[in-house]
Structures are given as C-alpha cells and as structure tokens.
Image (cartoon, rainbow, N blue to C red; front, side, top):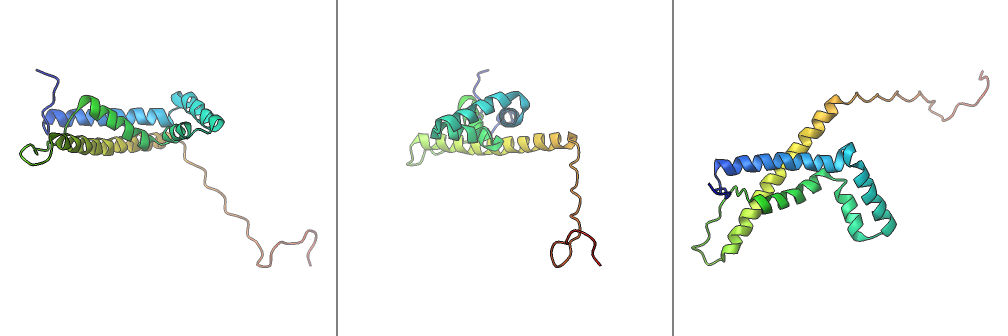
Length: 154
C-alpha cells in the first residue's frame, strides 16, 4: 500500500484530524507555553533591536497561536496531502493545476479551522486549572460634590 491518500476517503479525514490536532498543539506550544518563552523573547528582542519588518512580523506571528496554526496547516497539507475534497475539472477548459490549488486551499481551510478549535480547547482546559481571579472590591462611595476636605467637618 502506497503513501498516497485517496481524496475524500475516511483515511484522509482521519489523517487531517490527527494533523489538525497536532498543529493546534504545536501552535499553542510555540506561542503560549513556558518552554518556548526564551525563543519568543529572543525573537521579540531582535525585532526591537533591528527594527526590521521581518523580525517584527515574526514576533507578531509568535504571539498569535491562530496565526501560527495557519502557517503550520499550509506546511502540513503541502507535505502530507490529506485531500478532503477532489476537484474533477480535467474535462473542463481549465488547466489541471487549478484543481490542485482548489484541493489545497479547501483542505488548508478545513485543517486551519480544526487546528484553531484545538487551540481553543487547549486554552480552555488550561484556564480551568488556573486559580479563579480575585474580584476587585467596589470603589469607596464618594460625595456628589467631589473630595471631602481633611479634618473635622461639622
């Protein structure tokens, strides 16, 4: 059996689901986990020091798990090709590469959405373990005419 997945098959959907969950985990790890904090700090420091648009873009990318999941989904679909749809346009007047582009973009969209859901689930799961935030105390009542003067008031 070859490594090629049949477009739209159950195996392709399972492969896409596993890849999407992996992409979500990697995206969360790169952008939010403590283990990758030195990498994010180094990139952000380089962006501030060099003022290069490339480093600024990279620093902004590593601050957003959803943005990272898009790029990882593009790479995973390009490498593994778990086509979820198949565009049969060979009989039409359009060239064959347009069908490939459609398959690529449709699969990337589905995997990106699934990866974003995975990131959202991971974030929600981690927030459930976090201690509840303290509620701020209400401000002290004030007089309708501004500040109360110091000293005894009769």
